[in-house]
Length: 474
View 1 (cartoon, helix red, strand yellow):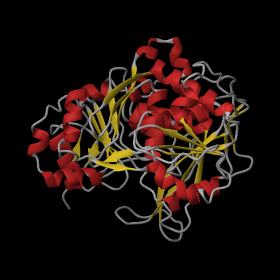
View 2 (view 1 turned 180 degrees about the vertical axis):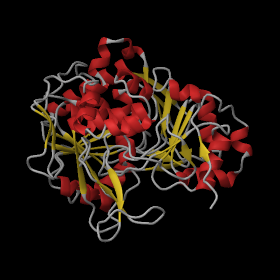
View 3 (view 1 turned 45 degrees about the horizontal axis):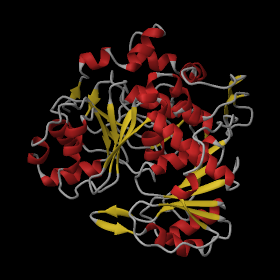
């Protein structure tokens, strides 16, 4: 049998990577030694957690007294928004761009961390005046506009629990999710654009709200300017709510186990199930995996080309990039509209350094041919990523050769809504093989078992299992 081709990571990338700096700090020589040291997962996750700010330190890293209902960082006080925004106001990060937003029609906005902080505070104050308090559920039905993360962060800041519903879902799907969450408020838009057509989100939401008695208010962001019906006493305009609000708002000090959000599975195996993630452990897991897998640095321009309506968007468009002080691209439209090279033009213009997308998108670009990316200067890119499904070797190689100039590493990430963060993935120091996610990350213990629960022999199929708890677990 021929040996699989192995791609070594660029030496400069590996030597200057965040994970190598972590290893150097702890006297760890190589990847094998790191994975061995991180088998003490309480040591590993506590070291990572210390990079975030806690109002009060934890008494215990992991409470496993009621397994499998594990609790992380017990006794601490924490809020993920403090780490996304508040702490950056004490540093030069406050003047840095948090989001480069580009709409499908071509509007571009640059939101600094300080602007985002102030808008989140204003919206949080508005929510509080509407009676939203800690533990209340707030449903979001929004396109890929900056007000989507603003609303998420405002909820989290005051201890409310957000539930984002993908803006492409029907009124029935929205209704089911609102009813299950017993949401108090819905936040939506008048309309949004997709492939040049107006999508009337508020009109889609109205039939759902007719069957949702828990909803007290519907807040509408004026995005497209299309005419919409507004129900007196229930429907409120975002701009009118926030125009006189203070841009200062205290951040709730929460228990690490307090709920951050619910996100519903797609319902492919029955009724959609609400997956719950929490403030503390979820923050530690997402912050560290983005920092180490995608090697986020202060001068990076990072683009996770997912939708905020899915867990990839929650973890790796909103929360992890902001905790890392990163600059992210937020793109509203379709990847191939109005032209099939829309993405490549954005990368060239904004000098994107890290691209994280799905094999489905790459296969679409493969059909358009190699000439389109070749027309654009993609030399700013230094890392590529893949998410959402296995990436076969043919697609992996096309991605590396045509988008990565034949040399960039591809971080093929395996994880899911329930895990909250990457679980199996290369690091910038990992030798790569086309089409494989390589090895479990530090602090993650995984195996492949046969139907009887025994370790599967090499080169055989089996069931993937996770054998130890991790902070971001549902």
